[in-house]
Image (cartoon, rainbow, N blue to C red; front, side):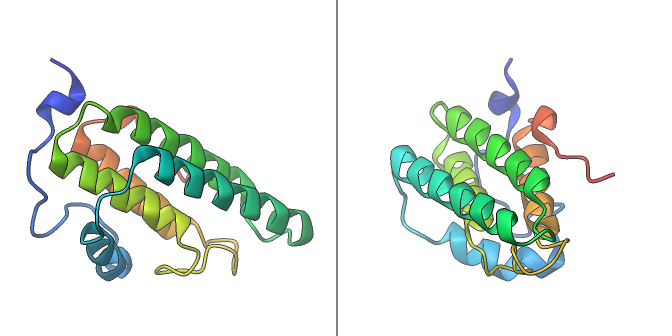
Length: 138
């Protein structure tokens, strides 16, 4: 049985492991209309390009972490193709959370700007049963 086959089929009312400071934005993103995977990929690639440019001019931008989030987001999107509607909605919300610069912590404003994004991605990876996509901050 695959990991995604063991993942829940409904979005939980209280998302387990989600950083508390990210909850409101993540919940709002869960309510967004479905987007095509191609559209999400285009937004994702445009965002990481913007982060790369910002990192050239600001050493506090944690480019390595942003690149890891981009890679994990791409993996989530690939796995979304065979997922349930609830799983796909959660994947879309997690990737969109990363794409938002102004979420719980401004991504480009501090050296820890992507930490909340990692918390969201990790909570989603665990909920989906994809421990291989968890990012270790240590």
